[in-house]
Amino acid sequence: MALVHLGPRDLVRTVTGIARWSVDTADLLVSLPGRIGLLLDQVEVLIARIDVISDGAEIAVARATAVSDSAATVVATAAGTSASAQTLLDLYEPLAKKAAPLAQRFVDDLTEEELRAAIGLVNHLPELTMRMEGLLPILATLDTVSPEIHQLLEEVQGVRQAIQGVPGFKFFRKRGEAQEDED
Image (cartoon, rainbow, N blue to C red; front, side, top):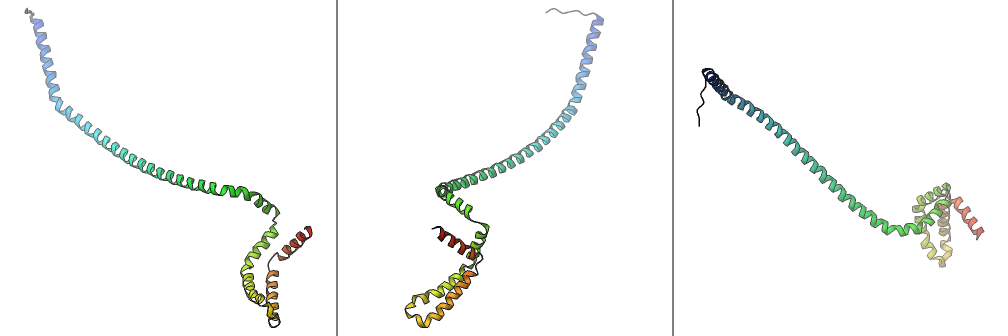
């Protein structure tokens, strides 16, 4: 390799450049620990922020898991309810189809007054039952009519009064008479 000869100016420039580079390198080396420390501080702040974000993500995942579990429970419950409902529909659909025309006729023919009378009759059923239970033993002994006829008449009179006390009874009696006339 051939040695290049530099003139004094070139040599001064080269040495000055090397000296400047050495000073710059030394300045860089001196500032490196501070810059590395600053960089490490920034990295620590970033890691802390990442930890906060990670913790938040874990909470969000836990909540999403809970919501998912709850949704799965709701879906399972709905599936069971749906299966039960389908079983009931399968069971009662033929009956409902068969009863629908009868129910429609009942609704079409029943007036509000008749409905009130039926409710009144149902309300009086306990009293009617009690009076009929008192009447039945007497009817069973009709072969010995004479001494018990007065008791029978009293019971029949009580039943008659109970029946007449039923709201709407006159309506039912008139309706029964009308149906007998139609026959």
